[in-house]
Image 1 (cartoon, rainbow over the protein chains, first blue to last red):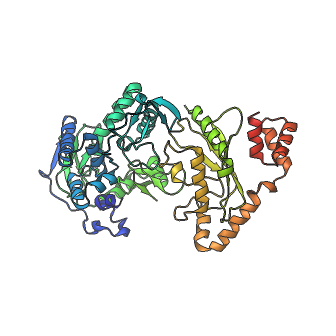
Image 2 (image 1 turned 120 degrees about the vertical axis):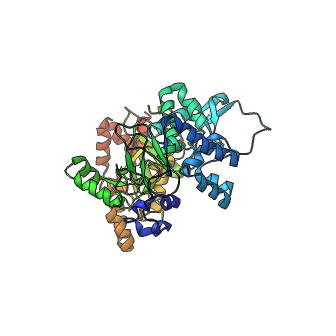
Image 3 (image 1 turned 60 degrees about the vertical axis):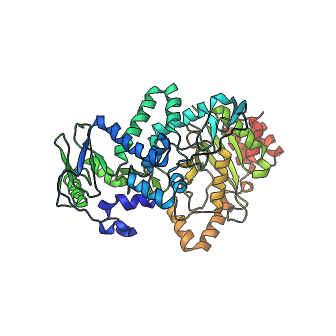
Amino acid sequence: MEDYFSDDDYYYSDRDSLDGLENEDSGPQWASKGPTSKVITKESLLAAQREDLRRVMELLSIRVHHARTLLIHYRWDVEKLFAVFVEKGKASLFAEAGVSIVEHQDLDVRPPQTVMCDICIEDLPSGETTKMDCGHCFCNNCWTEHFIVKINDGQSKRIKCMAHKCNAICDESVVRNLVSKTNPDLAEKFDRFLLESYIEDNKRVKWCPSTPHCGNAIRVEDDQFCEVECSCGVQFCFGCSLEAHSPCSCLMWELWVKKCRDESETVNWITVHTKPCPKCHKPVEKNGGCNLVSCICGQAFW
Amino acid sequence: MIDFARVQKELQECGKDVEGSGIRVAPKSDATLARLVGTIPGPIGTPYEGGVFQIDITLPDGYPFEPPKMQFSTKVWHPNISSQSGAICLDILKDQWSPALTLKTALLSVQALLSAPEPDDPQDAVVAKQYLKDYQTFISTARYWTETFAKTSSRGIEEKVQKLVEMGFPEAQARTTLESVGGDENLALEKLCSG
């Protein structure tokens, strides 16, 4: 979990510098506008994503859904992923991200005629069941229900296996196939979430904040945060997605904007009832339970 | 839609091993299986020993793909359980839920939580503070609450009869059934439900 903090916390380091991670010294460094950023249009999004997927698939000789799971876990940072691979090896790289590739093939035994699904506790012909990469086998109806609940819950990007404590992420093609049989609309939504993950989870790519949305995203080429310009003409700060505000810091700017809108009831409500997630900075409302909340991005915090 | 076939099977499974686990699950009323009552014995060697704790269970529409909602209806003094509402802070009842878990395994986890409080992740801040700062007082308070609220024998038979009558059973039948099972209202309820 710690690696999330070390990368993304630059802008909150003023406030959250308690943990003393390596980001301490890397305050915002303003770079001049220039060729360090690139506009990604709707059309080029898929291509950009495929390129990253291809690099990972080739290096590790794995299938696309495993590559995607790894990249989502490492926030589409191919270099970081490769660094972890070199440093810790394949096994731990996969385990951390929830990728399980089971080598054993049941060559000697023919699959049994019927399988008992541990979820609905019914005996079913083995043709109506699906075994995930992690080796857990459940019936197609139960898998489908599980996928529908998770997609509706906004967790498309990390749908875990149904077995207790199994950390494996489900094969996206299985999800797509099963869900599209009963809910084609939802399957489309699932695909869109996966595609947009390239932007949502990528620390080097951000949606252009224009309203109405121009459909573009911006990719920056190095780790420096800067002010960028979209092809639609909007200029914004890559650190906080607000309008360009250098040399004022993002934190100060955010406070200023908040202050200016102070009369707004919505802002008051958000300030009182939510806390920004330390990872994705979205406001999170605690809707019950204990003080340990988990953000939709997967980050847990107090 | 709740998978009632599975709930039925779970209740049967759980009923088979009441002697071993001490854990019971029974429907609150005949009308629906969506609202249940679970009972767990307080773990031995803890201040909850000797108590019998009731947990209200509500199954969401998506059960078993969504976690069951569980809440203590017996008052209990524990850092991860609200002393006011009985709300439970337990990961498997939230994001760590898996459809492969059952009501029984979830109740076993709740029972394990009674043995192993996690004061650093509190539900009830007052209790957690006491646990960390004054462990002895915590133990005696928890024991006192167990004695006061979780000992079934401390509740009169009349009260139990009344409870069963409220659920819709005839008074005479409720009384004889209660007597036949030695005053255990859950056993009586099971017996009444099974006809």
